Image 1 (cartoon, rainbow over the protein chains, first blue to last red):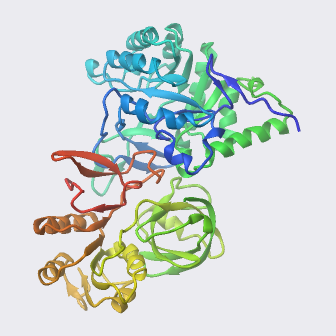
Image 2 (image 1 turned 180 degrees about the vertical axis):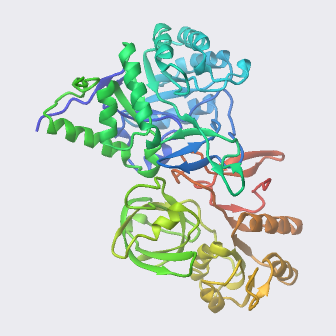
Image 3 (image 1 turned 90 degrees about the vertical axis):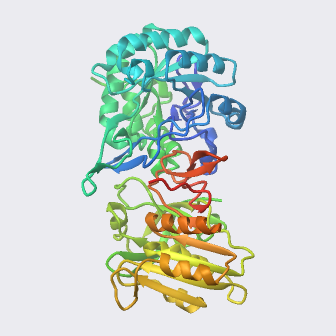
Length: 304
Length: 259
């Protein structure tokens, strides 16, 4: 049997295979390491980090909806310093790339975290620009193209690490945002983050979530995510890390054919802890079936 | 040790309109399974609803595990469609169960389906060494109380609506038992308002109990942080502990009930 070439290059970040796990769904890998072999995963994007520790939102944080779930965890995390002191070494035991997902209240906080992480043993920084911008009335950084330009440019100056910018789907034109992100020096674009969503308890006449609404993830958003990955891939030259509702190898291959150089699994980890391994194997089976030897030949290789 | 995979449903039993039980095969890879722990069970064979359902064990046998399940929504309702002999995908055992070594006189207090995990607890305690007092509360007609009747030195069964039993909530008999007895440990599982009012009672008397709690969960293993329990941290602070991983058993004097 031919040896398959599964390595992908996200513009300087080389993954053993294109299957990664999405930030917020995998903690710092510890819990899942008891269930699956983390060496099989191309990269782990860790739980969203903030400069200071955060306890996250109070009250109910999750409601399941048709083929999806809405969460409002509110970035509960132990802070970037705790991550550096207690989690990097653990993750380093595994042959997988570490992506540090960072979240700021202000542009200065993003830059500060990028500077701090520059000196640390992480393989990439993923800038989550879906956070509310405190100085801009709480509107997400990622929805205002001027602010996207400023935050990406400044973080780019603050750190020489491989830089991924994770886009929010809650925008009018994701292609415009993606082009700005590329112009300002990002190495890679990941998308999509969760979509704003809501569910209401009609008996209590209240939203299920204490915060009212949250981020929808899971197969429910997959077709939307796929279209956005396709659109972004068509307008930028940097690689795309695609995600949004991927639950099996077919989903993953759709994203790869639409232009994603790698994919991330999020919500599917919850319903199937073996999802990353099964998806990797499913991609390999597909390649063998069609006589493909290099995953890279599939990326964006749609017959249109 | 955690098992991820499929097990055979050996027996399905309908208890009443709202409740049923599954007896599944117990796999060696599951290791030790303790009362108070739970498994994350796939609700369906077809993958919708998507998330697994956290279900407490209600009995741990030599080669079997029993779950007693209340139909509360689409997931638990769909679970009824599993037939004996079919496989169920599950992950577990998960969470921290009850701590029960060395206690000689205990009080168990259950409300509704919260009685199920307590059944697993009392049946794993040796008759000769542990004196059990039980208070069980139901909304309507009592169920799964037989083992408690057989095993308890004292038992009080309460119902809100069934006048063949003492009408009222568990809090009244618990208060009078606490006047006359001193327990090495108290175990509670039931609806949130019950946990809350009992915790107020325990706190006022300076005693602590083990509360088995619940919350909507996704991963069930402590990675996704959607299920939390607000607990004390330091003298004035709080933290969001993970219900699935740090619980679902918490000591009553650790928990902050503010809703």
